[in-house]
Image (tube, rainbow, N blue to C red):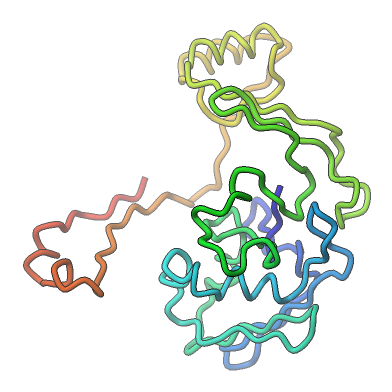
Length: 245
């Protein structure tokens, strides 16, 4: 339902999304992104540099995203379709962090979120993005129904008219639904034994995928603004080794 400034392919190469092109200064401290001019949110409002700045540099999101990007000095918007990230020092991982799939926030509509408490904004329950699909209905604990965004800025996409995402927590029920043809695709949730069994069926493809060499780094980050958690003895008592899975 949402879009990022950039996307990454399976080889982790950055690809255009809302940003059709970009450049980096020789000192590595200035990233300039040029936005597509035909992107709109699902309510018809255009996506502009103001939305990018609000999402990536707003005070309301600073604790969640900017805390992981302390090198960010400022975000400038010289015009409606140009965004400039100014860094205090070079940071080559910036382009990776601008991909929503890498943990960064999606580009939100400023006109619906500005001046509100983002965690409690009603549009969190009825999302308005600029992605290839838009929300039709959301039955919590049951299913989410999406339909094709006819005004999506990438010509000819998406290929599907409708997606029904069923919420299935039971691994056995999920495996049976796949086997019976009730669902077409399950990205996660299968047990290894069920995956191996389904792999033997002619009408089902089981693919073990993953980006080679890319693990998951689990880290405990202490809040150094709190005098209690900033105490060295407290930090030592809560420390644990990082795990690369």
